[in-house]
Length: 266
Ligand code: ATP
Image 1 (cartoon, rainbow, N blue to C red):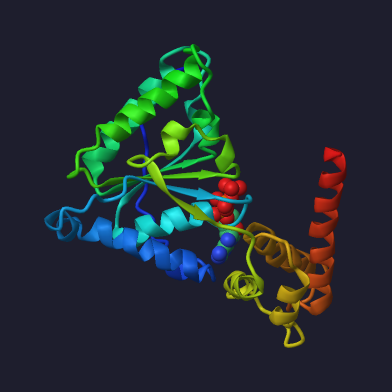
Image 2: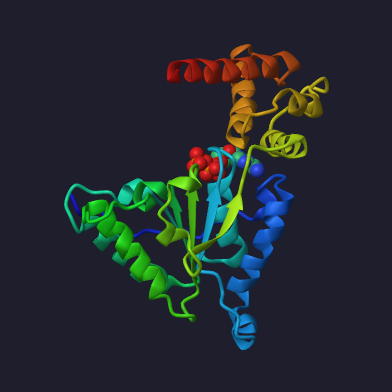
């Protein structure tokens, strides 16, 4: 099936304000936002605007959210894709999709092309092979090299495994800015919890700092999940506010879920 060719995009309203914590990462991204907003400033100075940024690190840490917020900050068209969308059974289909995507992104510029799980197409190539995956990756490289300085299209790739990526993809002039996004520290966990309980009726006894302390090692996605779970538990109990024990139960559930997942892996 090769009908899925109309590359779709959105204009996200998400901005850096929606991304809790991660201050150092945001600081680094402010410069990228400036590149997109004022390309002439850099051009006059003879500076090369980066074409590709790689977010790497564990899942659920806000990589997609950050990419969308760069689009929101710059009023760019946001093409939200995943690597696996380009992996097809028939040779040439993935490459064609990449071509269509770039065509559309150039037309709608300024644009951000986000490719989540980029390792699905960007894993190291095998010598002498020319399978569908390699053709798709080659097409991606061709498109990136063909970027003209005036294009104002920025690629953002995300992966959990930087080490799996083909060097052709990570070398200068391609995805040459590598930004690590790890699990949140205490401060960021606290900020994430604030964001995700903003519109929820919390009982006074709920102490988000304490919850942030207890949730070391969990991702932003887990914390969002905990906030949502505790609200659901409160509804189930028929009360009008979320209490401490609702949070405790939600944390217990998420942690137990993680432990059983890990034990399955062994
Ligand atoms: P994956 O690698 O699995 O694709 P990701 O790193 O792209 O994950 P996101 O999809 O951006 O993660 O985050 C998942 C959800 O977790 C977000 O929709 C948001 O609700 C929450 N979240 C994660 N980090 C943050 C953060 N810093 N601030 C607010 N919410 C966050």
